[in-house]
Length: 233
Image (cartoon, rainbow, N blue to C red; front, side, top):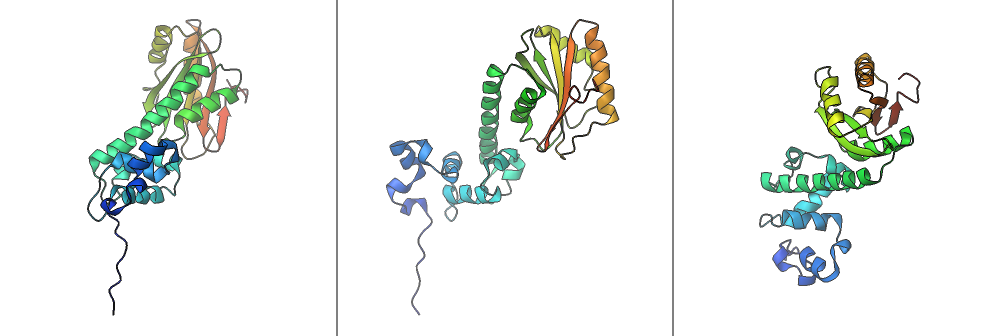
């Protein structure tokens, strides 16, 4: 019986112009697949598992969905055999930089005219998060966003949503109005009693220093809930 020789998966045996790095240098990054781009971050693997195969396995793990990849923590990425802590942190960092770039671009353009404007902005900030965060949008007199701050991670309590802390930030940034926000990774958009209490406490405290609470939005992949639109602010 003849031995069947399988093509080698070692990158040393690839044609030079097939290597992602060579392709990028010759044609530009835009022609590379998602897995090839990831392989440039991973750079090297073991003898049996070169970088491109690790990258393909990671993309398969995410069902070739970059949004799903962005949701992974570095600990999740460590599940791929052959990717160690340093490489996992590098990939997670690249995803975080992408988020911050999107956030920065959004922040420069956003003028709030409706709850939909707020929801679009918030979903660009929170869409990848699998845990709950409470955040505040600070606006100027022209209703333009001048600052966005995540106040807490992991759920809302009266302690982390202290009106004094939020109003101190508002005064520091010269804000004249606020919009509260938090996400529900579960997809449920209905506010809780705790949400209502925090909303009204911050609204009343802000009014004392002539700062207006414009809205409180709950966002999820299923849409958003606006206190203002529902007439309960």
